[in-house]
Amino acid sequence: MNTGIIKMYNIRKGIGFITDDKSKLLVFIQDAHIVDADKKLKEGDVVKYDIKETDMGPAARLVKRIVAI
Image (cartoon, rainbow, N blue to C red; front, side, top):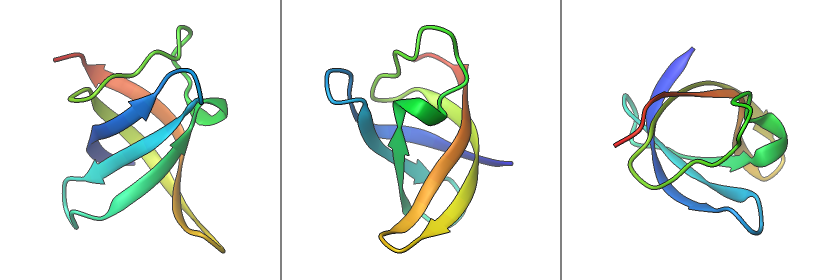
């Protein structure tokens, strides 16, 4: 599992980006891959996730909030 910080998340659209702690890579996130029940991430939340490479670049899977800032 990777750890990162929510850089941007649009609740209405259900998409956003995570900044990876190690590589500073931006990872795409969709609400379908958030395992928290409320699926309400916000900028600054610390999350754990897996990465899957897609045609459009890295995408987060199995996203779980660790700490809400």
